[in-house]
Structures are given as structure tokens and as C-alpha cells.
Length: 174
Image: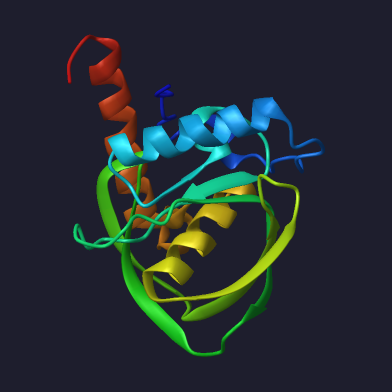
């Protein structure tokens, strides 16, 4: 089921999310809905607070090649256990901040530990777009947006555009 994606500024996007305590059918359904919503948007990552659920869960799939098999991932209670000193600059966007992009510098590689839908602990090292995406989504779980890495003027400009977008949508515009 597609879920509506919250648009910045929304106070829920700035809140710290609670850990997932019980991985049951409800969390499985949420993950399924989030993957469907992410692919439909289309995006490469989506965090639970973006669909109004204040839990530490994210989904991602950074396979861009249409010939390659998709690799949908569900990360429950993810935490970064290591960051490289080497950095990478990537032009980031966000489904909660539509059509706005800016260059963000982040560690080029990260190691992340999380729990899978099966309840098993997992750990993986991510590089490239995968590293950028997982850091971006974990930021969401901590109430941080990619625009928080920008200077105040640029951040304020994007926030004003989003406020206008929300007003236009509320009036029945696109």
C-alpha cells in the first residue's frame, strides 16, 4: 500500500525516532509499504518518519541499472559502527523535499549494523551511492535532513519553496 510522504517543514521530520522493540507482522507490513512507496516515488531510500511512523526503520535500494536485479533492503534499528576519513560529495535530494538538490559531503564508506525483518543481526560496509543513501536515511531517524548540512540562506530558500509547495497542494494545485 502506498503511503503519503511527509513534506518539509513537518515537525515529525525533526524528531528522534524510537527503536523498534518488536519485529512482528506490523513492522513487516510497514517495510513492504515503504518499499512500494519508495519505488513508486521514485527514490532510492525512505525512512519511517517520512511516512509519519516515528520508528528506527529504513528501506533502500540503490541499484540504478535497469538490467540489474533490484536489491531492496530493510534496516531496523540501524547504527553506523565505522566511518571512513575519506569523504565523498554527492548531489542529494529527498522525497520529503521534492525537486530540491544540493551537494552534501559525507564519509565515503560506512559500516552499518542493523536487525533484519527475520530478527537476525546484520552488518555491511557500504560505499558510493549506498553509503550516501544509508547515512541520509539514518539522519532521518535522528531528525536531521540533508538541508541541515547547507548554509542558512540556502536552507531557508529551500524551506520557503517547500512551504509554498504545501500551500499550493492544500489549495488543490499540483
